[in-house]
Length: 406
Image 1 (cartoon, rainbow, N blue to C red):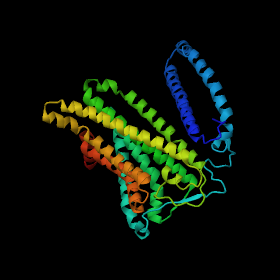
Image 2 (image 1 turned 90 degrees about the vertical axis):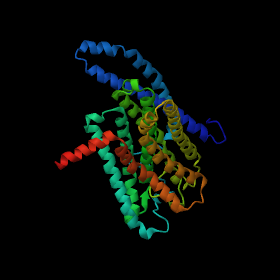
Image 3 (image 1 turned 60 degrees about the vertical axis):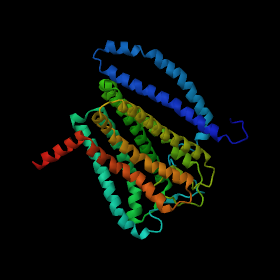
Image 4 (image 1 turned 180 degrees about the horizontal axis):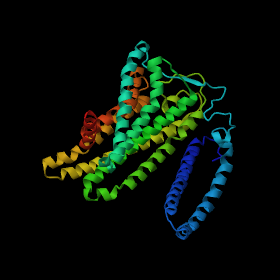
């Protein structure tokens, strides 16, 4: 592709995606050996340790023989490409997201266009919503960690959802409060790129957790006798760690492909926080790589929603096979909390994406409100929905409150 005289950006992007997949393989290989080493160190006999490690020597050699040449070759080919983009090839004084002197170094966020005089009043419900979201998700995490009765797969997945909601709240909190409370709209490019990485990362994590929770509901309803043997605690933790790693790797390119863009005149963003699709629109250089990769990430999110829909179609098929009307309602009742969480998360995000893609002439006020709802509503509502609908969580919270009163 280096010999081509036409645009080869698609080749570069897809080649980078394939390379990232290869890096993911070596990451999982490394993780497996960390777990093996942990198991080996728990063996008392030194002779047995050496015996176990000896079974891995051949594979370790094969891994090194394969990856050392391929990584060296990739570094040789990519050295010129990487130098202006990645921090480890910069001098220490240079910033990871440093913008060239020719471009702008500050973006400007917006609150409610044309209603700046009411920002202080708007900040009151926003502060309250953030406070409830952080306390609610923190409470869910605390009780799931400390209460043995909640040490079950469904509640472990709920703790992952609470963690991603907490991350979303904390990621957007600083800029939204600065905009609405102090009318401080400036944000440096470094801070903006960092914020959009965390917002997209925790959003991707929440999307994946909702998918895993749908699979959890499917197994619980369609194969209840094998539920505990299929979803063991160890398997749940490994699944959560693997998907969290995938989400980080998925959104990791966003700051770097934004860094390569040149920002000349436009510097006003259309939200009170930074999003990839919002920032890239301000670029005066070619942003096709950003569009392609952003579209790829959006497709993966829609793929999660599609699998969630498929799981509920299969659940509905099982439910319709139950003869008792009371039995049907009892089974469906176990899914209501998750269905609410799916709607709470996906309705604002799909609406926001549609506004960005198809309704360019839509009112800026509508865009800002939908964008703020996307970050405020899921972290606020999920703890409330699960506390109200989950009798076990509700009982634990009420029991703790009664203990404190006595």
